Length: 147
Image (cartoon, rainbow, N blue to C red; front, side, top):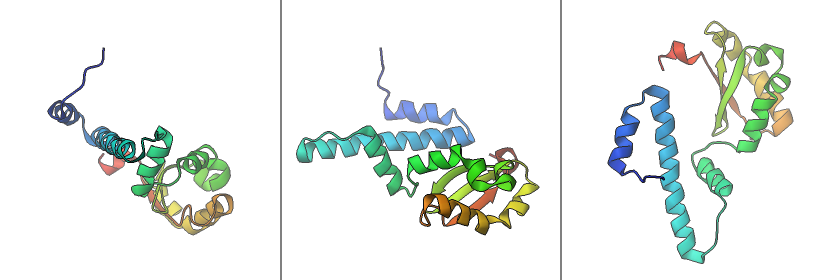
């Protein structure tokens, strides 16, 4: 049996998480609320059904998050697309408003990789087009950033 939680119960549950978990759950909750609102409006306007995948793409595009299929392909082919220097020392995290956030495996690598971002942008443009990634931001591992 599924129980429907009140907004206060959801807030209380979210408060029990810390840092990244809390932010991720908060974003998911906001997406659910936007989805419900969007579905109600669409149903009222035309009586049409909207696929969940299309809805998520619309929501993420509104938040500036890039096409999920291209992001997934970039992640799956990271070592091939990024080359050995990047591929073995970092992971792509997210593409938002044309900026690729990359997490370096070691804090000492952050500065080295930052000097090579232009070349990485060109390599990604060759594979995915120039508008997909226009800049790269390199950060260290989360445990070093205080998350």
